[in-house]
Length: 332
Image 1 (cartoon, rainbow, N blue to C red):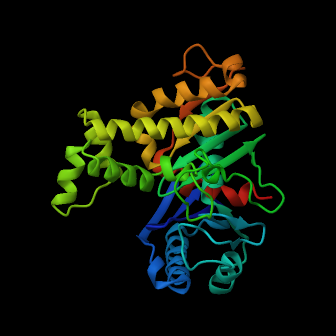
Image 2 (tube, one colour):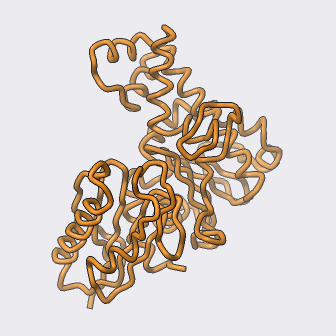
């Protein structure tokens, strides 16, 4: 009988659930807003209902398992959330146990960090699979900055499942305070949230008339707006993406010096501005990492075996959802 797995991408804005075949073909999908303000009970109820709907839609194939990709930090393998900065009020939520109680299904439910899930998908169906790299490090630029590390095709979890939190490494130690309690975290300067904050700052400084116009009209400012303004030559928006690139280059220098894997990929929604921030990223990386200088490929836009490659991710916004569905087959 044909089999399928269910993946759940629990984002701070949207909750997405999909069923995938053993060949990673999407069979059915449901997307609803993540009702963070209504608390964990509401989100868990919506998640369980969406999972049931997807399972019903994928029949008569046999369900193998359910994978949940959640913002971290998460204590694994228990699947307990530990003060996630982007999910206020969700501290100590026993996500796996609660879902097991709500769903009562005879298959494993595995909780994983959303960034680890995205990295797993890139390894087995994206950039890693295409280039033959079974070890990689991924940074995801979304509402926050996630980080997943894959060694020999499997997620590196660390001692309690909390490996891969590069989004909360300080790139400017005396910078502004982060919700995690640190200062100057990468997340503050390379996430979509950080991009909008920095764009507003440049507008108030008089360097971004396009952003200032949106603010004065009472319109929301998005990272997509900032990208468009930068492409049109807006000074403040260009400064923002130079800062994004510098922050990523600093963090990648540490990761390259530490991990020495063949592939580092940048994904998430904000990575669509790769062409705007990558020049500053590579300048900073070359300046700060002797390992990168020794092993950089001649063509930075092309994967070169045996070198340290830094490239955009291939799977786009669907990587976290696909990776969550892969998790039951690659569980600890």
